[in-house]
Image 1 (cartoon, rainbow, N blue to C red):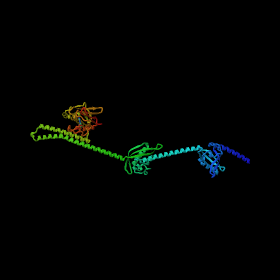
Image 2 (image 1 turned 180 degrees about the vertical axis):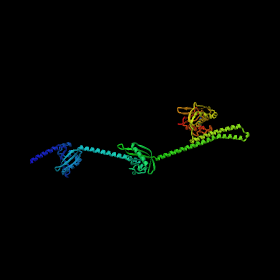
Image 3 (image 1 turned 30 degrees about the vertical axis):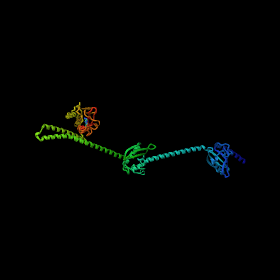
Image 4 (image 1 turned 60 degrees about the horizontal axis):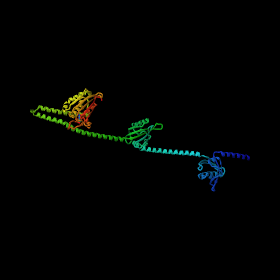
Length: 531
Ligand code: ADP
């Protein structure tokens, strides 16, 4: 039997050897060295396998102390002595991982002990795994740091945006796209509407505003969300709790979600009530100022006119008065009646009356026109007939002026005009030409412009002419270019001409060349009244 068991022992021993030498894990069998206080201080290699030599790179280790083989190990890895010492003393196996910096390697170690003071250690080189793990760990840490930084940056930028939104003087609100409930509100919004954030959030327009207003806001919101476009509402009314009706300038902006569907509606509103009021006040002020200036100017012009008019009216009246006084004196004493002289005086009186009548008519005309009562009596009218008639009517005046009047009107010109008013236009222009013409020749021409369907009347004289700055004002009421002391007049003739011409949808203007001298007045009238 012993023989048998010896045989078995040897076989088992050889199997064990084979395994020992061929296993991929490193193996070392060592003897622990203790000091007097039974502290483990070193160990000696008793046996190692080839995997041990391969993985540690150590050679001929058997019989040598670890402190000789790997100097500094006991100092850099004191836990090794501690653990191996404990295993060798207690016989309790332990498994652990350790990094041997002296070798630059990382091991997973299982230590056990079959004999007091000795221990065996099976170890695997896990350096590669550890490195990979470390790399993963490092990467993870970097990633975490990055995420932290990003989160912090995001938080900062959110904080920044929040404070901007919160402190901006305009109302800012956000509504959810689904049922337009308020999701966000800023301070300016609270102050404007008179409701606090907590009252507003989660509610919609119908909870705070009259139905018509809420309908308006909501319809705009829906339109913005459906169209996906920013909407600018220059003025919208809103009923606030503490500030009454206010007017807002609002922009509504759709905010899209990930799938490009509208997710929120952003609103920015500026309270422009005060601005509008200010503008309105300013406008009214400017208007009042203008009106006042206008009135002031009117007063000056009217005063001037009154003094001119009274002067102008007084001249013929004085002459009339004097003639009549003389006639009266004649008739007091029937013996002295000189029929010829009386006839002469009465003729002069008649002339003065005519002059007065003319001026009063002008005045009356002006007041009627001012009252908006220039009613045209349009009918088929021949302008040429009106022209020749006028020349006939004032033939005496022409003769007295010393100017020759040449009329160039080759054909009748028919149009829808008020014949009496046409007469007045020609008469006023021609009278002026005589008055300001210095006795030089006057040419009146009438031409039909078939292409333009209009007629053109021109009155050209060679008299005193009109300075450019005066040309601009002579068609205005009461405006005169010469002083009454030189040439009398009320300053109404051209104003009346312009009013009549404009009532006929026509134009009148003057040209006066300083070099040639004289003035050229042109009137242009459409032939029909439908212009
Ligand atoms: P009035 O002749 O009574 O002053 P008008 O309105 O007819 O009033 O004319 C306004 C002014 O235009 C005149 O005071 C005069 O200075 C100027 N004016 C009008 N016609 C002529 C003309 N043919 N030549 C020079 N100046 C003229």
